Image (tube, rainbow, N blue to C red; front, top):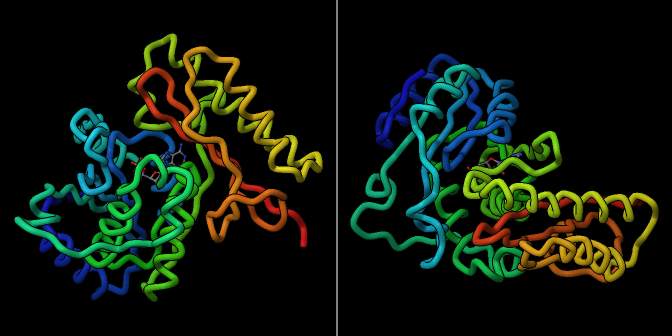
Amino acid sequence: MKIVSTIEEVRNQVKAWRKEGCTIGFVPTMGYLHEGHMSLIDAAGENDKVVVSIFVNPMQFGPNEDLASYPRDLDHDAKLCEEHGVDLIFHPTPEEMYGDSFYAYVDMNTLTQELCGLSRPVHFRGVCTVVAKLFNIVTPDKAYFGQKDAQQLAIIKRMVKDLNMPLTIVGCPIIREEDGLAKSSRNTYLSPEERKAALVLSRSIFLGREMAEKGERDCEKIIAAMTAEIEKEPLAKIDYVKIVDLETMQQVKKIEGGILAAIAVYIGKTRLIDNFMYETEA
Ligand code: AMP
């Protein structure tokens, strides 16, 4: 496994692989890897070569967010990648990615204005811009994203479609801790007491999913039940509990077709997200 930090090194490696006729799978991450990331890397193993990027992208953090404190551990990440058969880690600096000045943005418009986009107004513009850059650098056949960040996955799929990017986006299921909490690099911020309190997220998600599966179609009722579950926990503060259309990311009143039920909840100072998707039969 190689670890490189320049765009040129990635391009040279990819060129050599293409000459050999290899297919390339790509997993973009911000590092501090856990089983959630590893499930994407394992899925990418269906390609001849697997590239992982590890880059805490400043452009997707707002001014009061956790860019400086975001956890980083390249040695640990490299060891995990090696064990899971990764061929190349791309670990650029912000200067390598953005130089001294930078003008381009990929803006996905109304898709980025609901859910996490409301409290994180520049987030998805930063995600789409860096992912578009990484796609242009790595030129993968397939790229793998987790349903843990369901809005991100939907937006990236749409960006690829709208801009005719020549690759396939593969969505992978949410990996959870044994007690239900969705794995996240940000879980390391939680104190033992907060870690217990954080279980309200998955409890609320499982409750909402069960209601939908049992035939409830009234979003207001599902949202009320999910909200009440979270409010039982004194350390939890709701950012949002919403149900949106999977395609438009706009709120819906009734479950019809594909929906995304998504929550963002502060546990102490840590903002965590979780979700479920549901599709009614046509
Ligand atoms: P991040 O490093 O947080 O930017 O995440 C990189 C990729 O890993 C994204 O596509 C995430 O959706 C995915 N990911 C993070 N946590 C999980 C999880 N618990 N289950 C599945 N995928 C995940």
